[in-house]
Image (tube, rainbow, N blue to C red):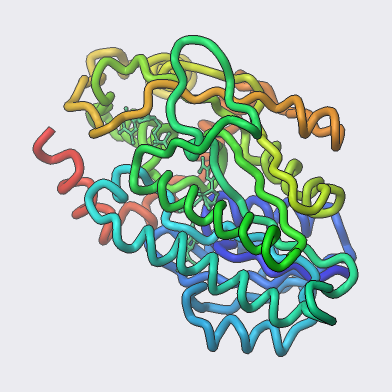
Length: 352
Ligand code: NAD
Ligand code: TYD
């Protein structure tokens, strides 16, 4: 039985990954280490909380003693590092925590893994692997044509993407310097169940259902490349098991849409299936994000050729499943939007 240390497993993608793995594999053990920041929510994991192959540890990935104690206590085979501050707008208001968690936290995990897995100088426990979950945002912004490949130079613009790019460079350094078996995955924008409503899609779904304004930054023609979260989980599972150590794999499904098209898709769905009174009158173009990247687009050919990965959920199906999930989980939304979310929303959108 392989033991996975999943960090940030109470967040959006981490909890989808844990559910994905435990639904599929009866013989994997998952330890979820999460600080439970505003973005972490154990309610996402009620399905598995009594599963004997699942356990939860509340800790900060920057806490060296806690991370080392966990490695000493458990026979960990794989680290999958999801733990991060993940929201670009928050990184613009408060960059420091992004450096702390995303850079220092990743280095803390790398050190602990290296120490626990070392069997000799530059030799590690058979089959162990450190997978860093990264993002296409480290490549910067595209013009109207072309795609990010694994050899596109890193050119991050936001404090968030700069912190993720820095973490990627440390992961590469631990492979180059210490021969630690690592992979880095760089995925495009995810969407699906359990995404915190600070991100475009759940924010627009929630606001539409609440008849609140839909704040579109600038002209709304910025392009993101959307992937259903389960397809990202599938890619991570494949890379952990079969990725060549030291390699980077881009993950994306060629699903580029301008933001305004996403907003209209959500509006149209809700209008047709839920509430005929909503419409374009809710859209409000607001001040643009500082340094807003214009376009992201992933070339996923490497992971397709090397590992046989392909996305299974089309955008049309995925967005319907996602809206339906939020409709069926209005209590989840109510819980995550009470308290601190209200002051975040006021600070972020109150003056726009
Ligand atoms: P999220 O913000 O929903 O979840 C982050 C999780 O990390 C939360 O559970 C939070 O409690 C935890 N966390 C934060 N700081 C921590 C710390 N110091 N110690 C331990 N736990 C901590 O993020 P997400 O959208 O699920 O993203 C997960 C990872 O995937 C991130 O590394 C992100 O950069 C990457 N990624 C995200 C996307 C996307 O579209 N959301 C796309 C590509 C890559
Ligand atoms: P987001 O979900 O924050 O992801 P990222 O910035 O990591 O790509 O934003 C997706 C796109 O939607 C991005 O171009 C910014 C835009 N956006 C809005 O127009 N309005 C909003 O309220 C939010 C949260 C995002």
